[in-house]
Each structure stands twice: as structure tokens, then as C-alpha cells.
Length: 581
Image 1 (spheres, rainbow, N blue to C red):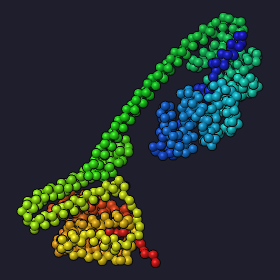
Image 2: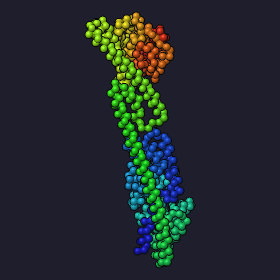
Image 3: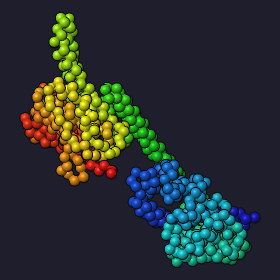
Image 4: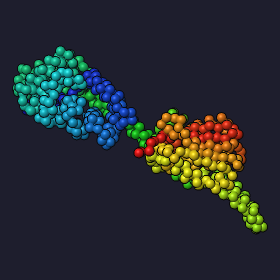
């Protein structure tokens, strides 16, 4: 009966593990960590698995599990999924959630880089659950591999674990071979902790076969060696086993002394376990506090995102002004983290947006006020039936409305471009037909201002462009030419070929012209004019910015030639094409 008690004690106290000594455990984890970090260096920034590996290297198992699961949910590639399952299995193993660890490991495919290591880890998990035959299957898959394959695991530790499996399966010959082989290795390495376990396992092997003369020396070796360590668990187990051995040998005094000593080590072990438990609770509390902080930040981010959306939808109702605002703030809405470079870009966009809002709002207000005043005068003249004055006022009102409409039309097209909602199709276009069609709509304004108009664009010129956006470009250029021309002046539209592969479409007027400083500002992609060179003419620069954007989208070029008081040439260069046949 006593011998049975001893064997049960040994089965209870000596548990298999891959790495027993803390130094070896730390060393082999560092090897695995560095290998994973090397893999991470070749992964894209911002991926969940890259974050998971970062937390893995810090032994933050809960965060590792969360981000590895996010990577699996994405189902990006089998390689990344294998890597995610591996570090999740390892993390569950460290948290002693063995069933979940086993599930994760079994989901890894055979071509995975760490597949051999996975078999070893699975074998240990199965062994710890008492499934010895199944554990042998996993260990046997790797035991014959060359030593070069054992980068993260000591091969002799696997031999030790196989010995334990065969010991539990009562296959004593196989158990003895593996246990003796691993014991010799650890004796050469002078690995004290491993030797305590190996000596105890060999003692159990012989004692179970009633070979007391072989078993007892190993019990003593395990006991004496354990006394040289600071491992309370090893001291308690070896001392308890010696008490049982001496009791079986009828030396009750020695058995009593060993029991007292074992009780002391058990108390020390319990104290140590309590310390570990307190440390574990403190860590869990810290993790919970960190998670609470993360949750709070997520709530704050969601509130900020909601506020931005409310601002966006409110502004859309104000004459589509937030068509522009949506463009400038789009990147801000998409991300919760604003780095310094993004903030600088956003500030610049906000400045341009505010300037545009200010200018457009001022010009619209001026137009509305002018229309309001004109209508009041119109009503007074209507009462007096002054038909000549009525006609002049109606022409004036028409001009004001046309200007305001043009401004809003440009604003709408600008907003559609910035939000990428505008349909765009580049095809072969006959340049003369498009210019003639657009110019036809301006004949009443040309007659009203007594301007001579001439369209000499070559009828053989074909360009690659989107028809609707090209019409918008022409409307803005002709509208500006009329706006800045004096009565009895001229406007010409013609084509030339001065750049290889491009056709130049030129809108020339004999109007007020502009200074070189103004010309350069108009060519600047980010500038909106806030100071008018001609105070009696409404101009925001939005039309020219729209023209430049649409020309660029048509793969074209834009230039201006002008001199103050001597007219202006607006030059649009578009990719040319040759008519088939």
C-alpha cells in the first residue's frame, strides 16, 4: 500500500514541462521573441498581427490575443493566419488555458514555419492533460529531426517528456531509454532543476518495477540536489518522497524528520504561491484599468466622430459649402489619431476653406444686396411707368443674377470634384464643335457689351478630353474674358500647336489685363484671390481654380499671358489625337 502511495505522489508532483529552469525558459523565449520580431519587420505597418507581435514581445498576453484574433477575422492570408493562431496558442498556454491553446495549435497548417515547434507544444499540452498516447504521437513527429531544427526547444527535454509518457503507459523499457538519455545530457550540462526532475522520474520508473536498489539512490540524488536550489516545489516533492521511502523501509524516525521538513517546504511554497497570486491579481487589475482607459478613449473618439458628422451634415445645408469642407475634413473623419504632419496639412486646408467661404459669402451677399436695392428702384419706376429705366434695371438685375449663378455653379462643380462625385470620361473630342457650342450661349452678352467675337479653332483639331469638364473650362474662360473686357473690345478663340503631343486652345481678350503678381497668384494651385485688382468687378479666383483642376484631370496644362491694360491670353494645352482615316 505504501509503495502505491509513493507512486501516486510522484505522478502528482512531477509534472512534465518544456523548460523548467527560469534561465532556460527566459533564454528560449527571447529566441522565439526575436524571431517573431524579425518576421514583424517585414510586415506592413498598422496590421493587427504586427501589433500582436509587439504585445507578445512584452508578454502582454491579453492584448496579444485580441489583436491576433482581429488579424484572423480579416482572413488576409494563410501565412498570417498561421502566425496568428500560433501566438494565440502560445498566449493561452502562458495563461494556463490549455484547451484553448490546443485548439489554436491544431488550426496551424503543416507548411507553417513553426510547425515542428507547434508539435512539441501540443505534445506538452496533451501530456499535462494526461493523454499520454496522443502526446507520444506529437513528440515522435519531431524526435528524429536533426539538431538544427531544435532552435527554440531543447531536444533532450523532448526525450524526457517521451520517457514520462511511456512511464505512465507502463512501457518501462522505452521509458528507461529516454529518461537515461536525457539524464546524461543534463548531467553534462549541469542543469540542476532538470536533473531533479530526471532523477525523480528514474526513481519512479524503478520503484514501480520494485527495483528498490536502483530507485532509492535516485530518490536520494533528487533530494540532495534539490537542497542546493531555491526551488521550494522541488524541495517539497523530493523531501516528501524520501519520507515515503523511509516509511517503506521501516525507519520511522527518518520518515518523521522528512515529513517535518516537507511540511516546512510546503509552507514556504504556499507563501510563495500567495505572493504569486497577489502579483497575478495586481496584474489583472492593471490590465482591467488599462482596458477601461482604452474603452474610455474609444467612447471619446466615437463622440468626436459623431460631432464631426453633425458638423458635416449641417454645413451641407448652407448652399453646399461643406462640399468643400467635406474634402478638407475627410481624412480627419477617417482617423482618430492626428499626427503632426496631418495636422499641418489640415490647418492649411482650413485656411483655404475659410478664405473661400469668406470671399464667396461676401460676393453672394453683395449680389443679393445689389439685387434687393435694384428691385426697390425697379418697383418705384414701375409705379411711375418709366419704361426706359425699367429696361436698364432689368438688364442690371439679369447681370447680377447671372454672376451669382455662375459663382454658385462653379462652387457646385468644385464641390463635386473635391468629393469625387463628378462623372468623368476622357474620349476623342472635336475642339471646334465644343468651342462653337459654348460660345453660342454667350452671344447675347457679347452683343450687350458690344464685343467682337471670333472663333478660328481649326476644324481638324481633335483632343483627348472629358466633354462636360471641357465645356466648364471654356465657360469660365469666356465668362472672364467678357467680364474683364471694355465695350467695343474683342474676344478671340483659336488653336495652335507649339508643344509636341498637345493642342493649345487660346482664349484671348483685349480687356483690362493683370499684373504679373496677379498672374502668378492665379497659376498657384492653392491661392484664392482675396484682394481684387479691379474693384468694380466681382472675382474670387474660384473659377480659375476650377479650370486648373479640370484641365489637370484631363491630363492637360494651363498657362496665362497678360499685361496690365493690354489684355489677357488664357492657354489650355490638351493631349491631341489624330482622326482615324
